[in-house]
Image (cartoon, rainbow, N blue to C red; front, side, top):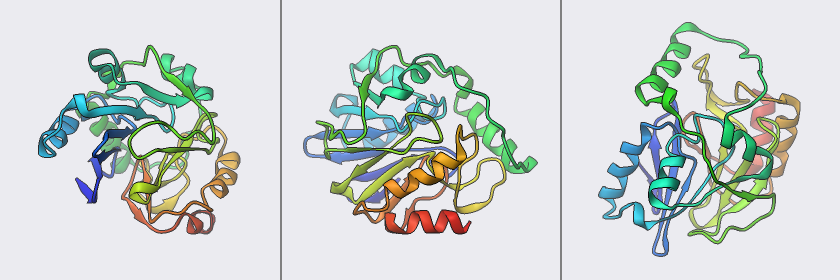
Length: 235
């Protein structure tokens, strides 16, 4: 799905990942679920591109619904997978603390888990080799993504700022559709390791220049990062 020139979304409001298309090649942000591989191939064909044009995959964090096709891309096509050092172990093993699910409604929760099953979420392969990144890094990838540490959802959660497309990719630092309740609009994401830290971390994206806030779950949000903290706290 084309959001803007050079900016595309794979998936939907339940689970999403993103593609940035430049003359120098393609950068992916997150890898959704394993079944999003087909969505990726479909989008690449529509662009007249292939996996050979992908220069790197940047993960906002290491949870299973964000690393779906990462290992396939890495092992079969040699694409490097970048993740914050604090989430590298989670990305390689899937090990993470148990967190309270919080409020839940049966319909939305079933839709989330059902979508995960349809997209082969139970067949996620963890990533054998990653390139560790840190807060403040500017990656040598198309679009020159800037890594902004936003710990809380996980220790190594990051936002990825890509000025070329005017976007901040926030992963699960926030959501615009709660996968367990169906509530829409900007709000904290469920399954967060440290909710208080996650809320504080939102202040780190406020100074960024962008017109898109792009979460891993929920609709793309057309707003400035400066509005993020205020809107989430209001929610």
